[in-house]
Image (cartoon, rainbow, N blue to C red; front, side, top):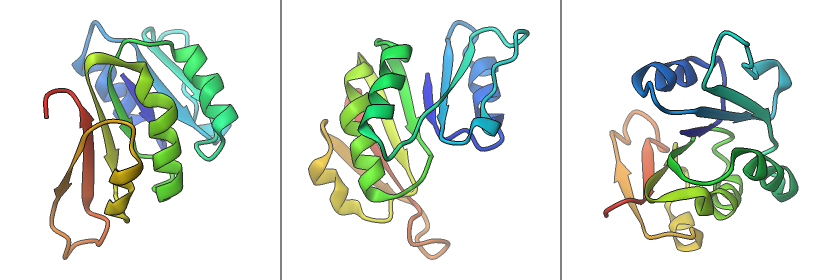
Length: 138
């Protein structure tokens, strides 16, 4: 599992507990948000700038391939979401899923590297209350 955007790290801990056989990776631009405690096996966080292809590629090298689930909940900037998907989607396992949260501009789907679908939630709550899912079985 790979999550882009750590914030407080609660979701990383949730993934780690919910999937006891998975290694969980987290990427964040802020070094103060990284969680790399020796007692938290199967959890690795890496500093990464979502707006930098060089930084994303360096993180991708450290993570490796065969990722079953990637979740982008980082900057929510459309150009960052597209760049991140273009660099990290190749890390997915053959039936893996890639989710992008908080979609402000649904037209980014045209620039994504994999077939995708848009899921709208209650847009009266927030105009970006959308999710894009790529990969897996559409």
